[in-house]
Image (cartoon, rainbow, N blue to C red):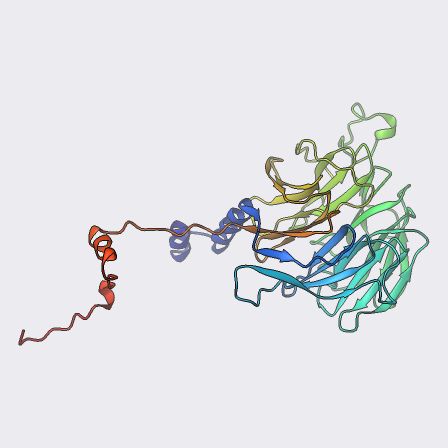
Length: 401
């Protein structure tokens, strides 16, 4: 640590190197925090969580009971042991509540005054956080599996929506209407994700085993379809051509810099792709258990070197090194399957939700204090009167002495 500080002070090091090193150490030491609880509000499994990026203070959760809850993650008590309180919730008694399971919740990227939720009741609702009433309701023909707002868009305010219908719907927040569809998939679209690097680039994953990357400015089809065999026809059977997985693809996540795309499928595989070329990087993560029939919400760390991937795996959360595929650790604490996890980049913390109705907080272990060897004189004085630091002793003297 002192070496990093000295090198930064002398201008020998990149100023961010110390931050990356400490962030990496904190992620590698994540443990279930016994001192932090999250209010248990949901009466059924938790499908989705999201932490707002403005202050990093408020968290949304959506459950299989149709309930949406807002939590305050801030610790006001000053005590080590505290509970993240539920500020408000859209419960069963609210007439605007979703009738069936909430599949995705997401904060508006630029303001905590608005958030969006989508559900198996075939609707997506844009909520006013102040009044907890929907400002806009979009209705669809089939179950809504996933929606996503671009975290960086300045030139558009589109929400991409994946439903039971193979067509991807693009809804405009400004006009309150569905303005465009993207056609190409042959089965329900389980996950959609905007690139954090280019605001017009969208990725979609479907039950037809395919992942497509789109430029929404183009009138024609997708830019490319990801191929697990990188175009090698000798390795692919005729029906496996241009497929990303040998099963349903139910998870999508871009790396923090947007240069890579991660996908998970029901073939128990996770793959890392070059998001610009669509090339399979062939990183081997081993078997990544995935039995979910719906979308799997997994996440990637930000600000670390190397970066890490957090993936629900049964009743645990598996932590992998992003570019090597090495399994770093398994975070165990849930009593039932984990369905979602979200990384908090400001504090390098992880929150996970599962079918046991719990949200667990995984927090870095604090660095042990550096204890210096005490001299013998200090040890002797410790037995009697407490020793005084020499810096605070009265060292005044006069010529008369």
